[in-house]
Image (cartoon, rainbow, N blue to C red):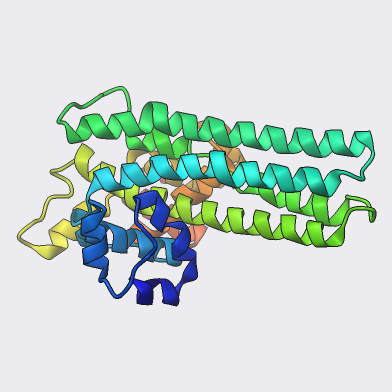
Length: 302
């Protein structure tokens, strides 16, 4: 375990969310995970995704994971962000803006308060709708009024507001603010933003595909012939087909978002997933794919 953390110190932030004691000694990952009642394969997979946002686990790897451990990670992460990261950042911000004018203080406080509300709303949705849905699936109870695709559509990408906060601190706060405190706050925001990026990757690239396997076990079952299994696992979801049709019709990301009442970032995520599944990147290629697969009529394209 010590060697694993040595290769990427960011994993230190992941360990407490699994209830793992950080006094490793020379113990192995398996020994430490077993002691914490965490599946070692699940921990190692999440560590890899957490360390490398570009890593995409294969379905075979996901089958070896324990979904209950991932749900536990999500709950603990929410608690970490709300009750530790944001509290510490709030305290640091207050110290930074202390010499500012009342108006400047009001602006920064409201901006940060609105962000905390946005983040809390995102976590509340996961804890109220997504996590109970997954637990019911694991228990064999299917709620037909909800699917994990709805989670993706409502999966707010919550890092953009932090970027705006960084710019406000760097460019708009007066010189009377202590520069050391300014740098400290900026570093905290960068670290939080990176951690949230990793958190989002775990949700998008581990949680969502694992739940899809539960929702449609036949589609993702191991097949005797590898090619048939690959084709089944890489099938486009209904929402992805809708996005693909909109792309083929020449709509821009914002127009697609407005049509389907989703965020631009969700559109981008869907387009990345479409490209990953069918291996086609250009609009012309996606249009041809949509026509050849009877998703859209050639006469409807200008």
